[in-house]
Length: 117
Image (tube, rainbow, N blue to C red; front, top):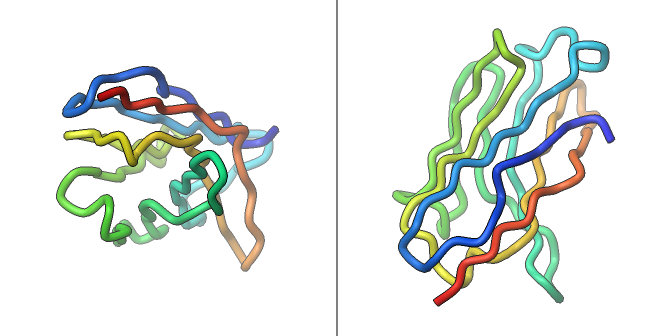
């Protein structure tokens, strides 16, 4: 495991969670060079993109995440976060963080989010 994701849990519909992903210094010594992202995989479904933030700070979101989720990064702490608001049952999934540099991707172990109605 290289990237370490945390912050998942059980939340009711309409609630909020903040996911965080940490990149160990030994592996990601120049964290600021990486494009970072969050993906998710619901039971029985393909892994899908949720949100991304480039090394320059430009953000992109899946349509399902727009206006509800916010991705941010802290290069000094080598972390990327995903603030999720107004959660819906469809947001239930395992969330993975992703780091890309020079077209090489690294993944974390995932953190599970369950939204109950």
